[in-house]
Image (cartoon, rainbow, N blue to C red; front, side, top):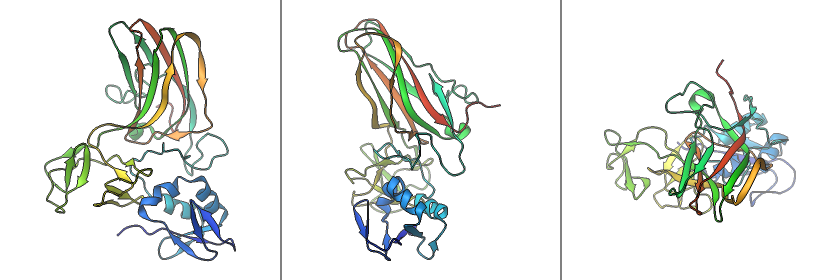
Length: 313
């Protein structure tokens, strides 16, 4: 059964939340497709924390604001929060979440998730050497959430030398391919690169999940094949759901867009932000240097991130 999430307006006057008017003293039921937006909203967090909105689990009012907010958020599968909203209400850009301690880290690499998963931050250095004959240089920046906890990115810093006309760099947030198998629970089909529920129902498909799927929000276009309320993943056969699942990697957010690298900038400059966004499980960063001049030049990048664990003592 799908999780029921209601909010009650206790302010004594009508309030508008995310475009929805809630009459004083009445409940509003948050639909499954909208739960991701509500659970990522600063305004909703503030109103629940202050008691202006009381969360109801379908049976009882959750008068404790923390319990109420936890019910709104639910237990999330990997879902990108890089959709233009903040993770939560913070007095600063440092993540401040119940039961979680985070530490600032300035790093020139991610984790080595393939060959050395026991050392934190031992991934490939973010030094890019563009050479004649190579149109691009690509490096993936991954974090081992299972071993070392959650990761948030805040800012990036960059320097470059000897760049030619047209040379530039971009960086995307990538959703990993959801893993499938063809042995049991064949409830799914693959349509292009989208994973959908079989039209004929359970057991009539060609594939099943081989692990937790990576959910790609479609809140802007509402053309997803799945809905997710924080606990229950349900197929949307009409193709109007809040999420897609893909069996190939997908770019979901352009973090750095075509920053020119013409000439030389020998000292790091900051691409600063007042935002801090989580890189969830199933997501990673991909930086690409474009060698339009077909010459030899270089770029170096460091990042300011927050993570739960910084060393493995």
